[in-house]
Image (tube, rainbow, N blue to C red; front, side, top):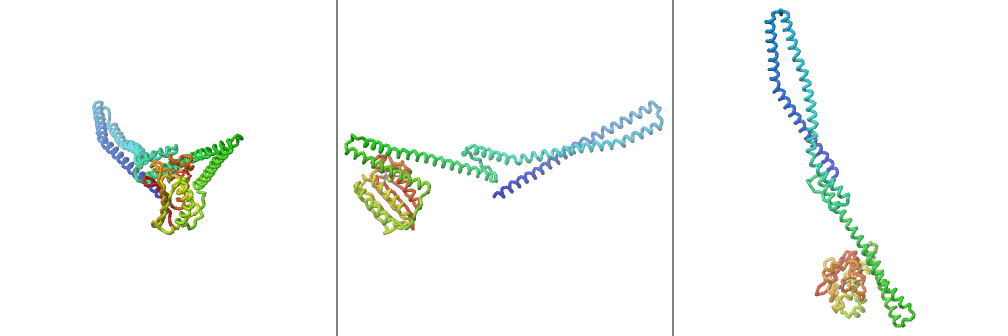
Length: 408
Ligand code: ATP
Ligand code: MG
C-alpha cells in the first residue's frame, strides 16, 4: 500500500512534468512563430526604404555630375566601384545583425520556455498543494489537541487516504482520551464513595464506643450501644470485602478455578441457605427447572456468590411482594435463570444504572437494608467473566433478573 502510494505520487509528478514540458514547448513554438511572422511582415518595408535610399543617392550623384561636369570617367567608375563595394558589404552587415537578432530571440525563447514550464507545473500541481496545505492545517490542529477537526475528503487518491487515516486517528484519540477521562472520573468517584461509605459507619462506631466508655452509663444501654457498634463493624467489614472483590474484578486480578457446576443443584443449595432469611422477611419461594440438571463450566464459589446477591436482593427488596420465584430453562446452548420478586418497582431511570457500583435506588438508601450498592456490579462481573450476562426488568408484574450462561 505504501509502495503503491509512493509510486503513484511519483508517477503523477512525472506526468505533470511531462505535460508541463510539452505545453512549454508549444508556447515556445508559438512565440517563435509569432516572431517569425512579425519579422517577415517587417522585411518588405526595409527593402523599399533601401531601394528608395539607393535610387535617391544615384539621382543625387547624376545631378551633381551633370552640374559640376568636373568629374571624369575614372572618378565616376571609382564611385561606381565604391558603391558596388558598399552594396557587397551591406548584406554582410545584415547577416550579422540577423544573427544577433536570432540569438536574442533564442535566449528569450529559452527564458519563455523555462517560465512557462514552471507556470504550467505550478498550475497542474496547485490542486494537490492546496489539499496538502489543508491536510497540514488539519495536522496542526490535531497537534494542538483539537480532535474535533476533520479534514475534507476531496478525491480518491493517496492524499484522501492520508486525510481519512488522520480523521480516523482523531476519532480514536478522542475516544481514548474520553475513556481515560471517564476512568479517571470513575476512580475519583470510587475514592469519594469509599471514603464516604467507610467514614459513616466508622464515625458511629467511634461515637458509640465513646459513649460506652463513660462510667455512668446503665449496663443495658451499654449493651445496646455495643450491639450497634458491632453491627456497624460487620457492615464495615462487608463493605471492605465487597470493595476488595470489586477492585479485584475491575483490575482483572481474579483467577477462576473452573469445574463442572450443576446450576440446578447449586440453586437448590442456595435456597436452603437462604431459608432463614425467607422466613425472617415472611416470604414464600418456589423454584422450577425444565431440566433435571444444567451443567456449566464455572467457578462454583464465584457463581454461587453472584446468584446469592440476586436472591439476597429479591428477599431484601421484595419483602412486600410475599413471593420469590426462581425459574431455570435450557435453550440451545444456553441456560437461562430468572429470579422474580414483587413489591418495589425499580423506576425506569434507575434500571439502567443498578449494575453500576454504589448505585442504589432511592427506596433502598437507608440503614435498614444496609447495602453498599456493589452487589450487582460484582455479580455482573462474575456472569460476564463466565461468558454470560445479566439483565433486569421491572414492572407491576414483578422485578425480574435474568441470567444467561453458556452450557458446557
Ligand atoms: P449490596 O452491595 O449489599 O448488595 P445493594 O443490594 O444495595 O447492596 P446491589 O445489589 O448492587 O446493591 O443493588 C443495587 C440497587 O438495585 C439496590 O440498592 C436496589 O435499590 C436495587 N435492586 C436490586 N435488586 C433489586 C430487586 N430484586 N428488587 C428491587 N430493587 C432491587
Ligand atoms: Mg445487593
